[in-house]
Image 1 (cartoon, rainbow, N blue to C red):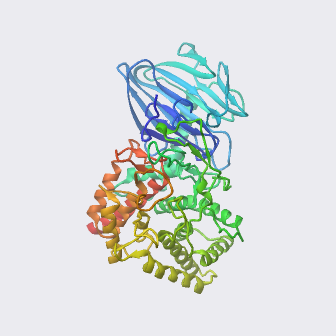
Image 2: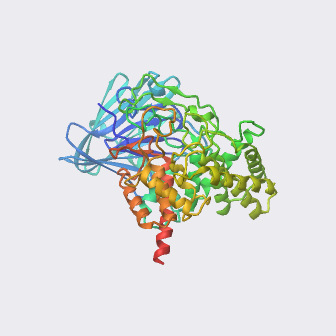
Image 3: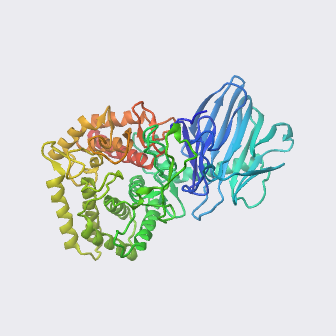
Length: 609
């Protein structure tokens, strides 16, 4: 057996954790009780030892289709056979803003037409498969136990169902078959840390859970103000960003997965189940552009807590990433007993880049805070004190080498993008102080902002390349700089920017897809190559739009949409073959899709009107 392709998945979640469901009806990635907890099902990274929860037709050939119930995070996997049509409806009822160990995976099994026998396999592998488990079976379900953790399987049944299901146990795993005819609904509910034993659930109860979950997602999505050309793609991206938000703190993970490779068989396999200040700031900014303000308020609180924790620290007010609860213990480790996705080892958990110095995060954080303020959020007194502390620290420390946005492990440099975002940090701080009449050392901040601008123009623009370059000591191009006009550092039609975009066209762009940079020209301390970076492709659309190349921008955007999967989800990168690679789904990609769509929509409307 081999791992299912990355793109052959949908995602469900309850705003504290998430699960991936294959088009074959298997949950092959689920970490519990939080996004960054050890996995319970991990077949995505090791088909034999990872564990899964699979439901599919038994003993017959079938084809599958997968879709989301409209405007929700409820996933429907449909099976088509010669005897009939069946489906599994997967969802997780939202858990609220109080952290809990109790989470429910609801799998509603239906025969839509004809008749169908479903084959069920439940083989949990606790703690990344490192903890053995035992199963306790009774008439109402099963309890799986391992090292203090429990998963309780509740069976959805009606009186007289004894003849519909047959259950067997093998090596403490559950195997079963379920026979249904057209119109019948049954199912299973897998609950972590359940308060009590397994119990029988009536069909009416599971239908009520379905209705409540649908109502929650449609109610949340109704807050979106976007009515443009790409409404379906934008709304799916918004829901996906929401699914990656940890409700108790407002932290947002970069992706719900770990160790999915940037090159199949390569070593660029990172754990993304944490909150990067950069990714979360970008995501909040994108949701704000859709009119979603609550997420910005919660993230602002999370960010303020992190800043206050580090008051007086010589290493800076912020780490680049945190666990979703705000703690900073992200020790990197390797799961040697797992083979990795399609043999891509090492399988890394934790993230050794957490201690890097990446100065751009201050610009991204300040940009999202400023956007929230413009959207009507208030700045509490403690919040402004934290902001001034950040900018005062940055005024002293911005002019130094750093690791940069891409977390390269090849040594610190004076990265141009990092300098640009430091400029953004001071610019947004100055604007907030002036617009809100808040106390600030404006003369100092303005001096530092202007010094950065002149330095970037003097050292970041390479005369022979006629382009802004990755860092001051190279002529290598870097697509992170596509955001320069987006953040207002330079006009999108400035001749210096136009020549930069032209240089990128010839070196980093391939049929509208965009590479981050050329690792061969700028060694990053890692072996192997990678695919095109989907964030950069959507940033390219934004840059083309601001440069007035609307036909090119729209073509690039529409092409990129063809690389999304059947459910409108995107991973981190696109391989040479066109397949999705890297962690999935990735917040970076979905937030950039939203930004590009809004910018392009506005420009096209302006031309029409």
